[in-house]
Length: 247
Length: 312
Image (cartoon, rainbow over all chains, first blue to last red; front, side, top):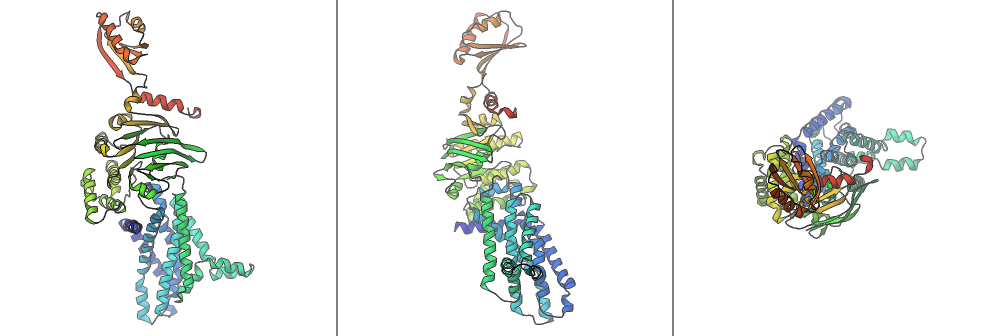
């Protein structure tokens, strides 16, 4: 019971601090404007004449690549820089509770930003008859993808008190995980690498799992993939923080 | 209440804390003294469970901080160095957050937060963001955070650092008021603070304990403990030689119109000098002062002698 109370308390505090600073508002506005621009002007959503949201979901992995590490970089790096990590970790809580509380808060925040794109769903529904299952699946996949990026960013944030280093590391790791299974890249590699290697590396990638959700396919294996990435990264974060040498 | 057993911490090749053991009982205020980098903060961070010790442990009212950190941390209130608090939160919200984690809910939480704010005199700023407050208020907010659950053990790293003299006085009074019900450890490099609030002082140098005793005990190790200072309007010729002949005097120093007699036997020196003064009523004596030893003397002797040659 204590652990749930502690996690909720930390989650609430973190969420509050997003909205007490301009960070949250800037992030949401930038995200919504950019995603609208990319969907309507770059992917030519109207001209395509199809009532489906593929051109919209197509951009999520690329936008998250920059925006999610920007949210994640401050999670621990800021606590270490300002020294508040010392008051936090000397409270009667476990490291796991602290990590989970912070992670859940940031994830809720990202999910909120993603859900605020709902006008595009309304637009599509008004113009035609989109496949509702595919849209729901797309959103679910997008939220899970954001969680996976976030867990990577949280780990890199625990490594260092420097937010820039944390950001760059997270972008690089996420980019790798993204491209490893992206067809244009895998096709290129498949010309010279053995098939089992390409498939093996691609299995670690965000992309094939993300695309499955967009088709409206909810496969337990895709869920398992995202949750194992998150658990692995959070576990890593715990280890890094437990073994840090100083504040 | 608080038992520290053979704490040791190494950072790579550096031995930050080397085999520190002590205990603190209820009613005691232990002052950690030591030059910067002596290992005071590292020791406190290990006791509060922030840093894992390389070896050794601290037992907090029966709970081992290494093996059962959560129950142990419940018994501690900790004020870290530089009072780190979330600057974007208001004082009230911050304390309510701490109170929640400390296990208070509902009205009980409101009451606790309200009481602590009153105790730490934070009423006027309770709805302000902490980042907009002055250093003194931030320090007091962090102090409030450490006190909110009325812990039996209170650990404070330089609690009066950066405060003005009035604020320092307030903090010291608060520590003294709480002392009878708690075991308190404070670290400082302000020696007057040790004399003002501590019942016991411990000098730490290069990671190990150099001295441990009440401030009065420590003072007896000072060169000036039991010394006598005479001031005169002019210097009679026979004064120095007569003083030097006293068996209880070790050394006599003169400066302008004053003479300081350092003791060989601190208890015997005063009656001896008084006898001499009475016998020589012609001496133009204007003042006589018995010195009771200076803590900074002791501090300097203990810490400088131990500093490694390379840094000198």
